[in-house]
Length: 303
Length: 303
Image (cartoon, rainbow over all chains, first blue to last red):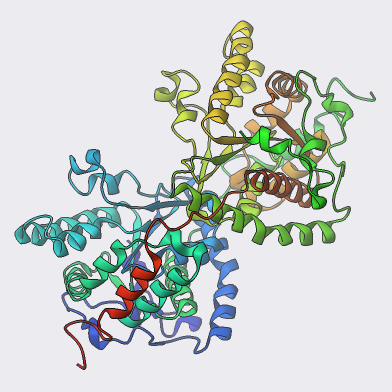
């Protein structure tokens, strides 16, 4: 549904949609090592401008969210699901804080997926995902997602390779169904460089107030960097579909990441163009009834 | 737990805690008709100052929330639950938007309770409440709550009076248990005047973009105003306990409501005084390991 609307003629202020620029072409394996994680493919070119541009989007994002929610009260089933993936410290949590913070929190359904519990493991891998989907009118945010089952599962060889290959297709069919049910799926890969990850991990070690965010296991995972990059490239190649494309966001600069994800959300919400529903009641009659109710509290008039 | 800490000697900047001023004394029935809903019992006295004061609390609230969450990663079970109750248009949703918006959305668990579903009705009335409680480190927000079962249930006579009376006690025991498990329960009654509700409902009718927030049923409920005020007064009388007191917030002025709820949250979070956990790993060893990992991506060095 979203893709169809996305392909409408670009409006004046969207002569170049960021989504078109960042979308991973279907079936193409991105060369992540060759793509600089500090690139600025479009938009602001320095931090001051970037922060200002992102702040300026806040009101528009919140307004579109309210309209999306309002429309759902009249039966519009559309909703948006933002999927955030990326290596440790790539800024999944920071994106939630700084980008999703623009929205009314009551319309957001946020889920950070951890290592699956025993119950979750006893079900198909999409089971726990299904349970956390946004309801109509909501904006869902997944910090990690079904893609962990083709990322860490591949790198750590938790399941046979053939099963990983089947999962790409299972994910594609799942996302196709979501799209058909009115979910606009926005999948963002936060592309971080190996060197920037080192800087961020060291920064966490340098600040005792950040130690809780650190685990020695992060260093073990980092040692598997090439295997993870390969797993990401494969997931992007196999699962960037017409129904639910992947967007590759350079994430070495936090301000650029925030601007890019905000802009991607804005473009998708504008394409949805949700509308406030019209009243299904007699507005004038209601106004008259309200005005006719006693002027003071009934039972307390004059007291 | 919270109450114990609340009774510590007041610090210099809390010579008068707002909570002490707004708390409904246990066992006392507040005279809501006599309490002006546009009162300014403490704090800022005009909108400009109120908005500025509330904005100034944002950073402190977010900082305390992060510490609360961080502490939970090291086993601290404490968490906060804000319960918002009030008549239609009293600003429960607006409070979530403007006050909870200060927090990192990923640490908030927000639930708006509607009329119970068939499944919910087949369970004890606290069943659906239990399922939505915040996890350790989180801030839970209930827009309506278990109190609906002694408010609308009383006014609409959904259950016999004797059962309503038992529910007050069930709620008190339930909240006592929550408190013992580390939940700081902050219950806020948004006190709105009959006349201000009329203005807000008319404003919704005057703006087609707000019609989705209006239902003719709101006028029927409004006709039951005295019965609702009585039901609220009884709930506040019976359920403002040492473990989980009720706070009465004058809500006719939105800016004052936002400031008051923000301040109540701040006072409770400061009383909890959550701390970043200390590292349970060897920081220096981790730093050395990180610095020893190859300078460029392993497998891509120099390419």
